[in-house]
Length: 173
Image (cartoon, rainbow, N blue to C red; front, side, top):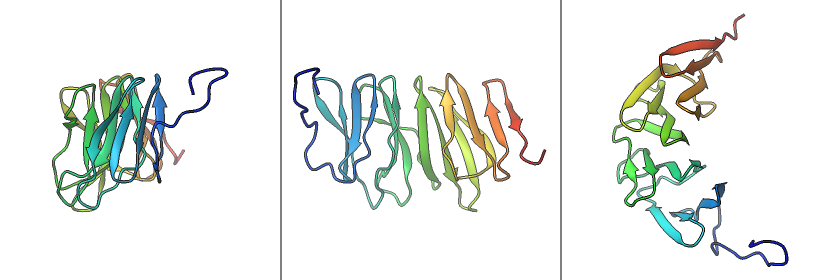
């Protein structure tokens, strides 16, 4: 849509199963096999499906796009696009990395390790940090300006504010 009096125009055809996300005039979507980004004037392909791992919700903020996708292995890894191709692979492990969220180029996500426990990770743009090794997978972490919030397996709300992690809400009280 280009404004009043103009007809809607498709960014993609046959984008079945797509869950588009928009921020600052950019749109990200998947056709089930490939991941695409419309940047206001052109569309680029960010990734192709590798293995049997599909794209789910693909969040973006400020030109940064994050997703869990395949790298040819048997588990999903976390990828980040920040304006240049190829996208940066943030993880390369045997964990099931899922539900990435981004803000200001920083990324938070859940991972399930080999003993089936869940962990919360945070990438500050330079380094990877383990924030919690007793998390719950029922919701994605939330991230904003370097702060990450999530709930643990007891549904207590935790907040990492850059200087440490503290219990923000105790469900037992």
